[in-house]
Image (cartoon, rainbow, N blue to C red; front, side):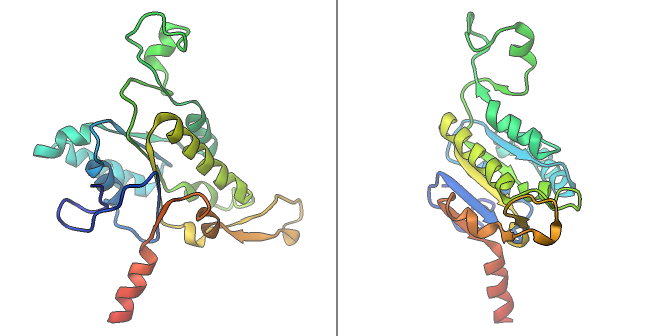
Length: 221
């Protein structure tokens, strides 16, 4: 069964098709979920490029050198996507194609078949993890993006996993604090701002909020 924690060190998750993990979750949670997912197919992590993702990559590299789980860790592939546009493109175009088979109609030239980052060899992934998508919308340059920009990435991810027959997990520490305009308007004083997190309940089957866990622990101290 899948888990956000190392083997035998935390509760198991129920089966899910879509999962949102938000709040101050431990850095290792995405990798733990990937390694515990009950399938031998590959796992894909789509992530923005920031300090948190360097920790993610370092954790994965370390696990690839660790005994029994090295083979599992080798099945995890991380794509670093610097902008929301890059992620949207990959989510819309990623395909699983057997490039070893001749006359594959979906592949039009040898270079694309071998080199395109949007093609994966079968079997397709069992799990797609989106890591920290709110990072695309929190700096001062991109704060004017409407909330539909975030939701567009989410719906593209759901469409991709449905097409691939995979589960989707979104890890986003800061989405509880993310507020975005409902519509882009020229005058910032006329903007109507809304919180993004409440909107996600309409899309995600299972939601885990580590903020609730932290508050519960603080209340007992």
